[in-house]
Image (cartoon, rainbow, N blue to C red; front, side):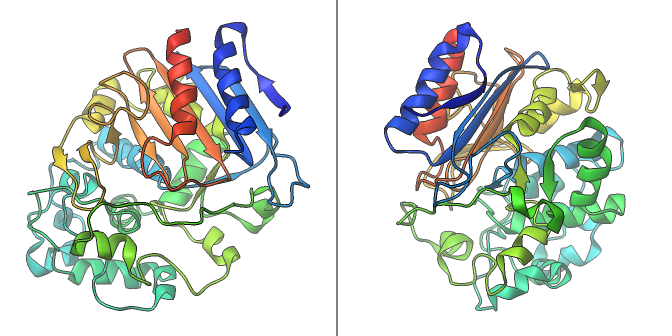
Length: 374
């Protein structure tokens, strides 16, 4: 039997049992699951090991890579610009990033870009994977690129490019990078252990990943899917792991603890209140989560409902029964969600990755048990 640490009140006993069962079935190496209700942490449990050799415990200070769940943080940072009237979802990307208008992209709006409708899911032409570590070079490529499908006609998930697109909009409007703004405006003031761009001083806390032995099943291999996932240059490569951790890629390389991520998501389920301070207005939370497009995604093998940077729960329901729930999932199984109807939010992180693209069975069991306990 795995030893589970943390806090699990009696009403969430079934969640703790499901967490233990994931370990007993051999599905976990190390993991943590946190729930926040009405702004308060009501469950926070962790277990297992932070390394493949099983010599280092997965504990309360362990940082876990969350890959695309990072997009939930990026979407919040954009929403804060909207809340501050520095940006509007319906304005064109080119209005803040003029170079983006090249190749017929002048009318693409911020909300179309955030909902994966811009046709820039990846680069079809061969490139050096190390180029991803050059922010300006990638942004120049995206600005010059012709869309892979007519923008606004369909969604096609942008696994890596999303971070450069949203991050460059943020930088052009705000002047800082997303990683800097996260650190200075939210993580530091509220004591949140959330990082986009990890300093060397924190490397010793990072969980070692046990990667899956197979690729996910994308169901279809069109140009958009190949550019997003299936070329040798579809993701950063050719550099050290340390350089990957240091780089700010707001779509893919967040490092977090589950409790900090759940607290941030908890503000979105609690009218924007985090530790007694208003970080986002209810109106903008609702606007960020509002559906921009629904239909068969051109990259992911699902019918998707997309908000302004958020996956919406309504179609696939990876995060419980709520139709108004929104959040994001990441490669290997991590996820974060916010449910304004019940004021419940949560985050699940782990270091043994699965091949499931959305709705990983491990957090799904935990979330379903949590809702039964409400």
